[in-house]
Length: 523
Image (cartoon, rainbow, N blue to C red; front, side):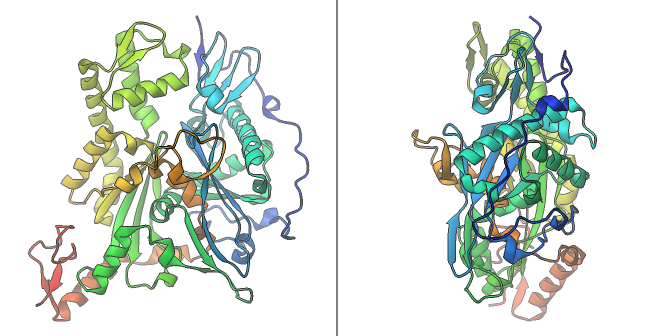
């Protein structure tokens, strides 16, 4: 049986196959505002794409955020802010069939019928079918991707638009924030994806790209909370940073330590978001001396970047290829859902009995193979991020993304982090939500009510945040010499006469005497 996955199409299809009838004209927003004109789109560059055309105008609009993952896509929504209101709202996740993780797989059968989401996820391919599992990688790996890469993207986005607009009518007027990897060709990717959105019937004037690492940071720190006060006669909204960051205990703890002069001024960390296609790296610095209303966007993230190294190609592919060859398992005729269940089992150290035959995967011999591939994955990833770790010298490194949910992988990587002098951050509060209550259906829900943890949903939640409505001077931020400022701050502490060197020399980030600053009160 010749079943093609990924795949070169036997009968070439064209862009016309992916084009839907022209959508009906969008309704005029009830706020009376016009849609932003195309020329008002932010310039797509790493230095200034956060600066929106008019923060007073844009913050009144709802936000729909899409984290388009290679394996799963996530969608979150936040309503707009109105003048004269105290706005306290938690961004919510869109669930389809009770699931926050929307399968990105696209299938086309031999009759030309297309399938998406959970339906495609549970289909067993037949003869002559095409299964597009890695269309995101094919789309982003080239500045001029082939039609066979664009077509499944347009088809998927058309289907997603229909699902979103059916469940969230306000999304027709919403700004679309699409989270993209911080790759070197970010502007080209953003423009290409915008064209795909337009072909799929989305409103092109409301498209705003954001860096995945930056959105992920905000999602992890703020956890979907939005606190805005806007008086009716005020010039612009006021963001209540104290309440926004209250959910992030480590920030509050370190602000207290700094106020007691038991740690240095700058809190430095790195967040690693390990995804299916890329790993996103976000070094960040928080100035603990600033008042809560002076934060800008609450954090000062510098040199965000992504590397083309992810779970799908660098771990799943080689590992499953070796395991499947040992048990003579043909994945080309298997459901995508079953492949995911196999991965979930073997990464958790469990056995899985394949439904289409008397085959068992996950034996002790297989687990040795899994361990070898996990070690290989970390060994390949570390050289790609070690330069940023050495330059930034973070106090802590936090893992995020689907890859970090593989406990064996997270343990190996955390040991490597600790051995390099940083500290792997405990993230029990990020691990799970409520695991779902078994009664969730299609609709909008707070992330903690879903069956997915914050690690998987942080990017889509962060991209909805009101923090991204606040313009700031990213160029000036990039020019700051953080190393020099840190050294000056440490010298000031010592020269004041109120502090002396700590015996840990700043190497123990959990030190109860200095809080990891290297200086303790001279008492």
